[in-house]
Amino acid sequence: MAIGEIAITVAGQGLHEFTDQVAGWVSRQNVEEGLCTLFIQHTSASLLIQENADPSARKDLEQWLNRLVPEGDRLYTHTLEGPDDMPAHIKAALTATSLSIPFKKGHLMLGTWQGIFLWEHRHHHGERRVILHI
Image (cartoon, rainbow, N blue to C red; front, side, top):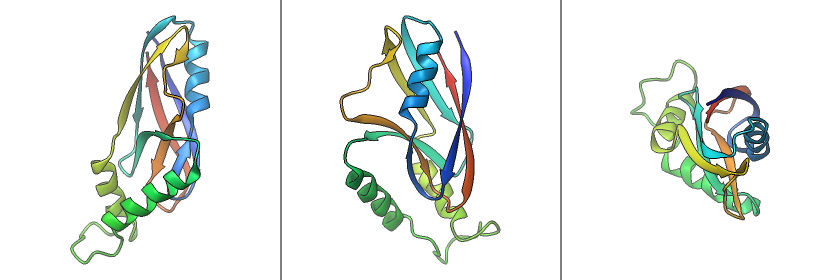
């Protein structure tokens, strides 16, 4: 069993792939096979396994979620941190804060076009932390 942490620098709202960082961490653990669990330590970002070949898939997902959960809704009362704060919490509630990915021979068993993404729901630039566990 191993626990690790990955820091992911984000440059604003959107999907940020970090598959290689997770794959590298798993391979360094010298564990033949198992399940890697990822957990994001934030309430305004989420995790996603999605297509990593065509950027238009990411763009379409981002636009769809922004349309579903718009900024500036008059019903929001949690607005102290800005107009993107409450929508970010709703988006995180609708998506995943943890993922589980099997691995074998030290390699993630993702499909051909699958990648691991941090979905940043705020406009801020900064760092997000993801905990990994085998």
